[in-house]
Image 1 (cartoon, rainbow, N blue to C red):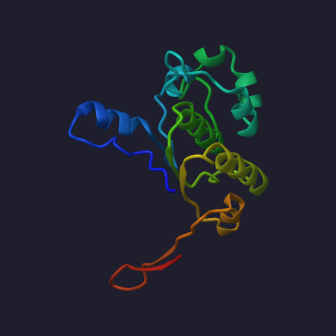
Image 2 (image 1 turned 90 degrees about the vertical axis):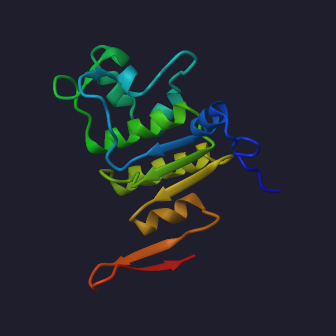
Image 3 (image 1 turned 135 degrees about the vertical axis):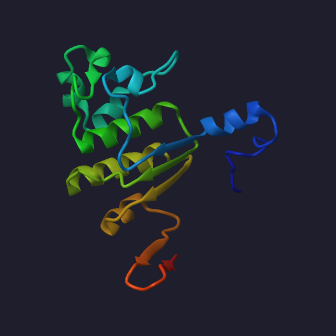
Length: 170
């Protein structure tokens, strides 16, 4: 039996559209953070949202959080703490997981990470999304097997001709 997170969710009502939107998470390759806003704002922590210490540990962000002079109130950006590219991606993954999405799209989560950390992070993501849908765009094909995917789509782009061609293998 296939469970659809969108069963009975889509209709013309604004409430159902917002509900559907809240079920989807997206982590882009170059995550956006508000410059000179605090980390709490940038992680979009609100009301009942809590930071899961296990997630912080599994994403190897413990040292980062411990180094923040004002904790979640620490500003990030030009006049504050400047996370590395790898830290930004892991913070964006944390931000997405806080919302408990049923579907999570992640673009290049291993960017800026060494192979070992990338493997740990992908295994963690696969575990956290085991009851949902994880859609991953990843150039390191060696990392795809960590997820034990039900389906891999390999798309190769050829830009050497007048037309862009795609070779898709499932």
